[in-house]
Image (tube, rainbow, N blue to C red; front, side):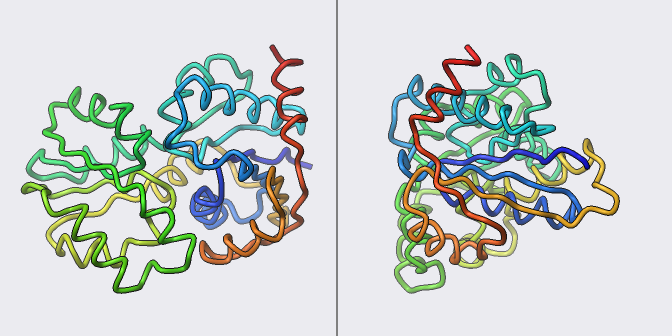
Length: 265
């Protein structure tokens, strides 16, 4: 039996990455860790987020995963490439695939990126895009996550808030959705920015990169197991907004994550 692929996020946003990966690798098994007890990562210090990411990656190693996808922009910004260098298995984040996709898509070289406060403040998207010779505009949109998790992604409130956040947007032709929650808001964002601006979903482009590197499991059934550090019912309820939860959901004590990080260290 093939080893499962590990995925983790601070909460449910990474389920958009899981959904995209399952579409590309339908027979592969997945283990998803949602660190809902310590969400959100976006407002926490970088060193703390790096520690959380290390603990979860070490925990996934104990489950004998074949690879790890950091399905969280904030954790990717804070913990990579250090995490990839420390792990004995392949590790992908969601930032580099988004940057590369934007490079391919843009026609004018003017690119925007929206994300959490932590992701935008880290400057990781901006520095990587600037290094490619692109002109970058960045905007933190912290309340977008709450809109998605409250099931308000198609509401009038979502449109008002989107227009507010993007009111200072200059002339760009490509916009990176730099948070894994944001693809759920893609219809309203596209409506606000107009059809001339291409949206780059970090979830979809990450799934493209990972699926090109990993072969699907022949004869597999695509089993998914979820580990959640917070309340299981709350996780299941919020995850329904992202697209539902297939598979078993198992409570995970934060102390067990800390132990995994200490043992691996």
